[in-house]
Length: 390
Image (cartoon, rainbow, N blue to C red; front, side):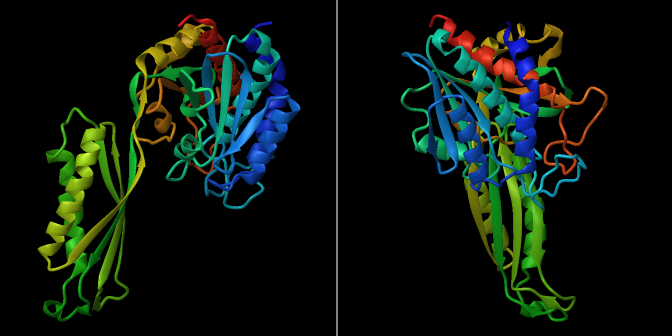
């Protein structure tokens, strides 16, 4: 029986698992019930596993001096579900709107098949069920710090993400930069309040803030190699409470995204310096707090070539395409700093739809049939890699 045939037989069970996870989502670093459920499933399969980073789980299948890792994220988002599905979230304000329920289910499905074939693996498959992908500092960084990549250390790691822009049954790959870094930016501009009819007696932080937004956007046009994609977006301005009062303080929020770490680190310094200098023009004090988040996700060229070749045995080669890099962020990027990785996109759009609500949308509902392809590729990637001479 081929792997895809075995997964197809398991499909009703995968649907049941996924719908359970979907009904009971949990937010980042609070995935207690989800972690317990995964542990119960692994125990029922006879797979040894360990808790890490509080709600994370690392499991091992097989034995030997070679190791390949497979990863799934397990957390949900603070979104109130609006799909109307019979298995919709039973927790108001929390939803699997990014497909992590499907990611977890596919890794559990892969675990079952790999356990059945354990004697023939020729090495170790490390399964990483990771918490907190949606929230800095990112569960991947905490799992790494807890030793998830040790004893044994994988030679390579594979991961995937359900992708609503592509049809179910398709796969997309890209070598090199795939997803961007993501840093959170928080500004505080301190002025001096006054009556709005006497602006000369105050130091207006609103004037400083509105000008600062335009000034900092010049970072993208004048301080960045145009061949290196980057995004700076101011997403929030808060200050003031009445029509006749100049406020003391204005606060701004935003995000910085990049594929190039050298430019990203330059931008941190430049933004802080320019914030201070520009606000001083208005006799205000400008401070910037940068919450340094995920690095860019860089797919290894050889890992991608390997996974793409394996994919051709899973789906029709015509169903495999190139992924256009996005300025989204993914904490799988932390693993890409440790070893060769391939993170691919799994088409999730139902075949009867030309488009569907995207990631982080309250109506997000990917095709469950996509899990057959994703589970099969996880199994085949691990098996084939361990069977391939170094």
